[in-house]
Image (cartoon, rainbow, N blue to C red; front, top):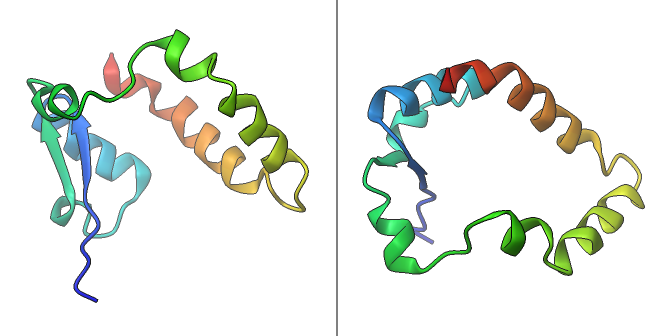
Length: 91
């Protein structure tokens, strides 16, 4: 279908490279783009902040859906494990 998946991360290019390595993304440099000035995020007027993200009514419903499915937390556990180990990237 010719659809290409890309990811845009806020931050410096060297941190993007560390993220690719940390997440073990095969060929990640082909589809991860970094935005040091946060311009794309601002242009798209995406949600920001804890209030709009975690206190959104959809958030607990999403977690409830995930916890009610067999192996619904498998991916979440994998992500949290990598996130916890990756906190050192920002230091």
